[in-house]
Image (tube, rainbow, N blue to C red; front, side, top):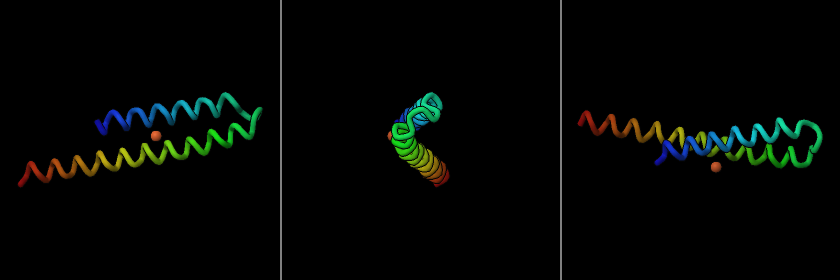
Length: 65
Ligand SMILES: [Fe+2]
């Protein structure tokens, strides 16, 4: 489930990057809004990655106890 969430966040990051590339310098206000959303999506992806790493460490610890 967390893995699927990470994949979804990464798809969102790529989608916002695509929108920002598409906008270029034609619409600075929309571009700034998209960049702010992108920053949040990147945070979400980082959170999911850290959570997966923590879960994986906990699983390894449980296997060795
Ligand atoms: Fe998100």
